[in-house]
Length: 364
Image (cartoon, rainbow, N blue to C red; front, top):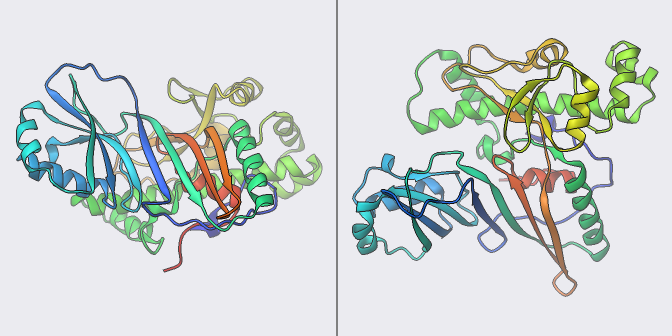
């Protein structure tokens, strides 16, 4: 996966040891809105360890005598982590659930009621707390400075390696399935086609990060030659205050969610972006997807696939801002705990990789 990735920052890589385990990786969902406290749906705030979201849905459905379709959830969380997330189920199933839910890997922290069930994406974001090992004091200080800078300047919103399966190649099967024109069977095929969709997004994003870096670091005449762009365009792009350059026709969305607008005035769009009021988006090609226009469309087209229509299309933020960044270093153990918040759909590992400048995927 990472051979396609371009890092936006130019600092020297910071070495640390990362493993995603239940003792070292904590994540908590932040709901999109307050629950109503009354209604026909029971909302459970659940802490789980060493269990995927899919597995927990199966466990809850079985305990409550429901079908898995009756269990609502807002986001998917990994198995190798300690996670706190929310689930909804019909209120009348509570008695059976209380009687039958006995697994030690699941703890119900809070219960409330709501008028509607939870739906995928009903999330503001996630709060992470991650323990990194084998990091010396000097690097721990650099880590903090770099992470705080990224909180201010933002990071590219790549999909994490987890999206692409154990071998990082599930998108290849996804491409085959998408091109076969068949209807998708089951969640496995959906995941593979989604991995292909995400792969196209990541390679598009890498290409935009790369060209932004050339404009940022080279003199305009050299950048124009390298990119084969008119000098006037490169000069205009170089004047934009932020690293990631906005082109005419980019699909901008109010940040962290809101209205969609096409970039018509590059200067004005760049200023809104630099002020964290809106952010450019990349294409998740599929049914009904909104495509960029003009120059931005020209940059997007090579990473589009109109044969992928078995999934809904969408736009995804190309650039996001981590928040609430804090670190705590322990000299004795040479461990660094890093806490931060990311908007929904963003990967903690992507943020850590931008700081460390190397892939965190364990070799298998």
